[in-house]
Image 1: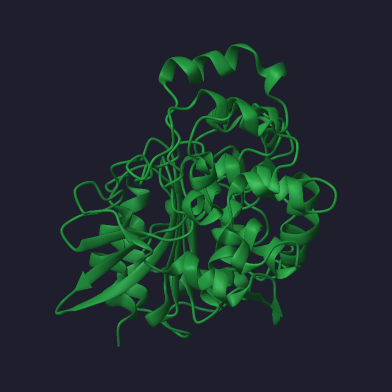
Image 2: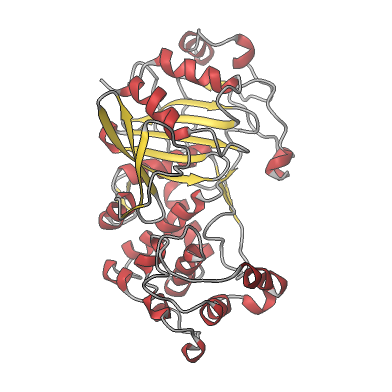
Length: 399
């Protein structure tokens, strides 16, 4: 029986923590139909946390197993999860672990619900990168196209009005946050005042007219800086139909991700850098896709070469301000819309890559251990998730 197995697997956790209100027959807390229509900040806080060391098979395409039996030190992970439930480590909404392709641990706290898409914040950038990779897999672009100027794919622009150097902005540069646009805060605020004039490629036209000249010096790492928006514009330009249809039909539907939200930005295109929401289990799926070199259920959805760039340290970004970092996190770098860092435990370091979003959204992939950690949170920028991974999760899976 599910309840019996659950109680056996989490004997170290109090009964009040296990049986939260609003749980389905597998006990996981679910948002009601009414709650699902609310903004995330209005979702009621769970009275008690929920954690499961034998996650239910919900027929959603996520393989499941049992923590401690299929891998991992159950006692160590349950102790960590209890500290999260007790709000000792920040404000988490969910914490999940997949190992060797199976979801072994699943937990929800505060505003987290198993069936509720969670705002991804900047983790959306990584999802946008995967979308571009999908376009390459289907032949709408090639890997060689990554070194071509963004303007070469956008046919509705007037290049006679561009500032100097726009042709230096390639897809590769944009994917690594080195496009080099220089738009003042005042100019950005002006954009917001007249959104009707910035629909479609008109947004790019405005950026390329109003930026300071693009130079080798300006093309340094600058997080955000309209780079994701340029990539989404290219996706919109090259795929059949719209980028929004492409998200649904060619990426999320292929992975059985149907419960999501992806809002538009000022151009009318899906926001490339934020404003998407997916469930924590869908985040696990995207982690498995990255772990498996772009394959999902045996089908190559994203080119292996593109995933290799996504997961590689294309550039070193420094260790002064590692988001989610700490004393055992160093060598921070960046791939294609995805962060990376070395996580130290004992005398050994483990290379990690991660989609990251403000507030506490992480999809952490540690290929050497075949380990994926997913977290969501809110008001949680200082929680040190990568440090928690190095200090508390790695030792539970290192043999």
